[in-house]
Amino acid sequence: MRDIEFVKGHGTENDFVVLPDQDGTLELTAARVRALCDRSRGLGADGVLRVVKGAAVPDKPSDVDPDGWFMDYRNADGSIAEMCGNGVRVFAAYLVEAGLAEPGEFVLGTRAGPRPVKTHEDGSVTVQMGPARVFGRSQATVSGEAFPGIAIDVGNPHLACQIDSDPADLDLSLPPGHDPVLFPHGVNVELFRRKGPDAIQMRVHERGVGETRSCGTGTVAAVAALLHLADEPTGSSYVDVPGGRVRVEIGEDASTLTGPAVLVARGQLDRRWWDSVS
Ligand SMILES: N[C@@H](CCC[C@H](N)C(=O)O)C(=O)O
Image (cartoon, rainbow, N blue to C red; front, side, top):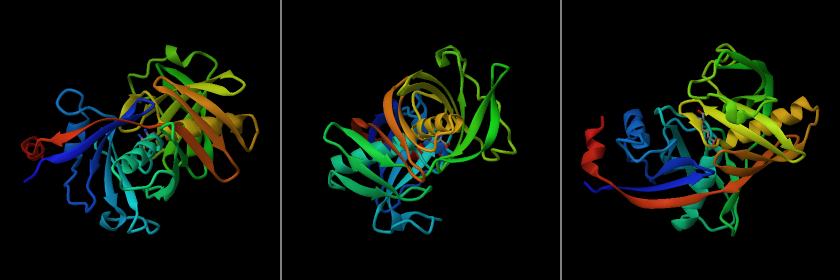
């Protein structure tokens, strides 16, 4: 059996192992995802992006194009999530670099629905993220302190909390407490504050991962929450995260995310190592 090709990439330092698997023949178990993402015994990453044709996706949503490329996203703990905004950008950059898509505009399949993307000459990628839907108010508890926030669906669940203090001062080493009734499948928690008229500063604790240096869907949720709290239906903002800066635009029924996508390395996974992980 041949070794397994991989690419390593990141979007604002939210990092991923990309596994090309056009025909869906890799047995990508939760244990293998955990091992790949482990920063000591594997390659290290926040998640895995399996590059597969729509036709080869088991239990696929009905809107998946069988001839298109599908982003099969997994969190570092092995769980499956619906959507990953930074992952989509890295996925698009990989397709172009591998000659599997022409630079410019194309559409990717995700569990949250099709996501049109546009690659730019400077290496950044714009993703049409769909609507950012507010579905309630709740609170996140960090180090015993409760922060009110807005529940937002960006294909995956978020609780975006606007705070007055510096997010850098928070301890996000533990998962923030949240309401399991409103978020029965867990939640990604964003804590953000205004930095100026056109920027916010954000940190995030991701479901299935822990604190990450960026979360694309989280940046969309944070800007949607900012606008919701200001009673503004549409708007845009830069979002500064520990791993860099992205731009978010929120429309009535759609949103876009623009930011960098960086491919760092490519190589081969040792097949014996892969087989040894059950
Ligand atoms: N980092 C991602 C989000 C990945 C999924 C998330 N952890 C979840 O479980 O919903 C992004 O850039 O959006």
